[in-house]
Length: 357
Ligand code: F0G
Image 1: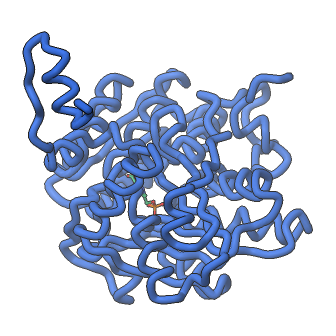
Image 2 (image 1 turned 180 degrees about the vertical axis):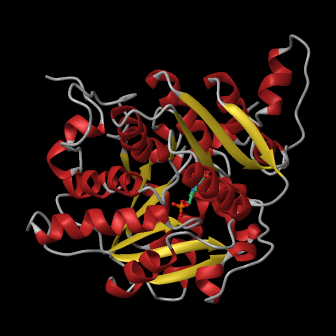
């Protein structure tokens, strides 16, 4: 039994690891990938579908970004870059910071001031990144990151506009087909900057083209209602949502996301913050999986699309839950129930549990 080597070694033949990289380059890896595909019993019962959760919050820095970042930082290191830079709503910054730390190169992260979850900021601090707050939203941060890296070529841009990020992230689709023995009928996931939907579609398409799966899923891309440019068909100038990870008004991979939707006969959908939070609580309470609010968009989409018949009963559905709930304790605790306080008194404990009989 070989230990899991991380994505680049596991899927090397399907990734653009490159002859032009420095001789002797090695993967920069935290052994990301190989995340569980969890059968979602309660959600299956609720929807009449065969629902699975792809639990990406179990990656090394707690989100799917690690799949792309192992590629991006490996490339940066192997091509002699001195540092990496990203714009981020939080998860990309945590991931870039961790991989840069083990690569031994500089990392700076551009984040929208006051609009990233506390756990993600804590990660970037601990991994030793230079944190730069920008007076603006994610879209402004990305523009600044693009301009900076266009001007200074010792700094690599590690946002998903970097093509190797998408290549790394497509491996999640491979893992799903490998685990199910087929492609699902529908794949639901949150959409912000639209890199991940692009990546999944590429992964499913590659396995399909090679005959490893006999079909491809319909892609269901779910955005927050206050930040739903792809649903509206136009950029959103001042995106707003509790799901700060996907608070993005002008997705960089717009065209690729539309292609994924169209080619798969899929759909973009918006979920209100209220529906996102409902799904967020439901996943934790019924499936035992604590995700961050943005991640619940996939399940909010599943619930809406099964309710209105876009997803038929009996379908096999995979929902990617993209990030770990521990990253955003503030949102979790904002609906804190009343907490019992007792002395050293067993009866009081049992009574607080409602189990005194
Ligand atoms: N879910 C989470 C938890 C995210 O952090 C993101 C994106 C998405 C979904 C959307 O993925 O952008 O590929 O469509 N977070 C980026 C960041 C923007 O900076 O961490 P996408």
